[in-house]
Length: 336
Ligand SMILES: NC(=O)c1ccc[n+]([C@@H]2O[C@H](COP(=O)([O-])OP(=O)(O)OC[C@H]3O[C@@H](n4cnc5c(N)ncnc54)[C@H](O)[C@@H]3O)[C@@H](O)[C@H]2O)c1
Ligand SMILES: N[C@H](C(=O)O)[C@H](O)COP(=O)(O)O
Image (cartoon, rainbow, N blue to C red; front, side):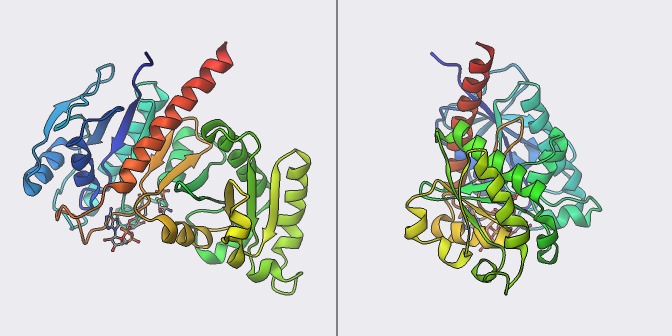
């Protein structure tokens, strides 16, 4: 019998839907051991507000998480100053980041096999005076790696990004040969490791309308993207592009591809979310730990109502568990 996977689940922004999604999940029996990383008072209060019969149990490293329906193991984190659903409070920001640090360090120390994150609110963390652009960048820094890749996925479509959370005006300068090379190599390697694809086929979008129209609508394709893709092809990576982004997301191309590499956040993610919002997963590739997340934000308008859909959280946990098993297998293979 294989040892059960233990995943840390951070509850995210206290004013958002994250805490109640974690509690909804706890109403069901689970295969994976889930440890919710959050303030226990916040969880107890939200359970009371929504009339959810969930028992909270303190969890400490080394213990087996409770997987029974109606029970949840909690790694308590101090510092949550306000627990009002729907109302942001900048004083909670350090607490939110502490939940991420606790989960990530627990993964690095071997206490967790991976981490799954409920949504945080980037704006309120910045209002607290803490520069924060997303979990992706935060975990990259915490884990001390030069490059990571954001990829969102449904059963039918995978979209990875060359650039993530930055103003649109800065995107062009950020698409350098070095970044494109690192991102493509990580995507190619992790599609093999975690998705069992021997020779991934990756479609690469151009940056400009019509992929630059032979240089008449922008030169990034000619100056940066095409030469970089040629070098990567010489390494054996199967790349098609740069393709015009407006027609890339059609069956003609997608039917023969394993992933799309988009140049920036709102070139790729609106298509993915149109296709599968509510059942997609957000994965950070290239980290030394497994990290998956929901495809949605804090939904302050729904917080405390019990109406939030847990579909994406289910996907994030299922994919996180699968990736954790793949990582175990990869490590076992290396050491044998
Ligand atoms: N993984 C993350 O941490 C993550 C992801 C996306 C956005 N965010 C952050 O969330 C905040 C709010 O972002 P936004 O308003 O653009 O997006 P949002 O996803 O919070 O909300 C967009 C719309 O989708 C609805 N919605 C979201 N999740 C839902 C769910 N589970 N069930 C039913 N309906 C749902 C909301 O009610 C809203 O109408 C921002 O600060 C953003 O940066 C965080
Ligand atoms: N870009 C993500 C999305 O649109 O779903 C979201 O902002 C979360 O990003 P992080 O995982 O970096 O927080």
